[in-house]
Image (cartoon, rainbow, N blue to C red; front, top):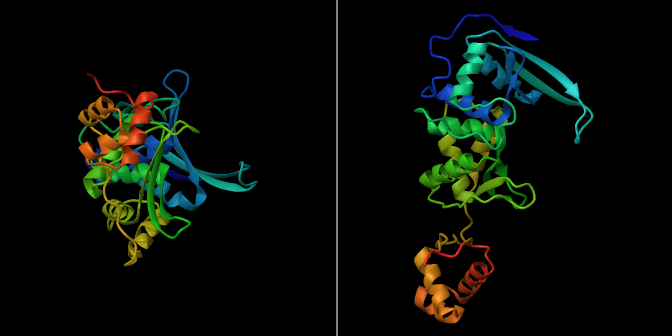
Length: 278
């Protein structure tokens, strides 16, 4: 077991304008847990694959309170010998700080949201991605970058952040199987996000930094076309489509394909898309 004394770094704990703390907070918000004990007892902990224990040593270095790191081996659904590392801090002051910044006690997957104080955005998102996201190569050999989250606020924020970097627009929707949001970006969009987030000297998991560097080597084949950006349906478009009631006529008026108009009209009429106000 590794332990840390009370010697403090020369910076304020969980100052989210500090890139290391912004990253650490994002990681803990996605993958950490605040446990409430009797009275003022409790603990903040995070358990990850033992291969990533290096990041827990970084968290320990950044935390001016007593903390410990231990490893354990347990049986999971995937293996009988899963080695994990657990970082734990029990300080009430530390727990109060992260709680006030936005890590609730108990179950939190639906509740987490971006901080309401000034923070380093790309470092915070990198922490979220290291904990709850993935990046690398698809089975077809294309770069991808993905976030999975149950939080509406976090999915909405990620979609906005990614649009600023890539120009790609995503409308977060819960999937039907797990009721979670899955935002995925491919090819050049994935490369731009990875390059922006995993910049030199930034705190991160070693294997995700390696993946971020790896996908930068992909180049689009000359014969692979770039799909044009999706054109969003506006309330005015929907009203005109409903007024005409004919996909062929609407396609000519709205400058869209008949197939697109037919599918949108079906979704409006079946309630899968909310009809615009009259």
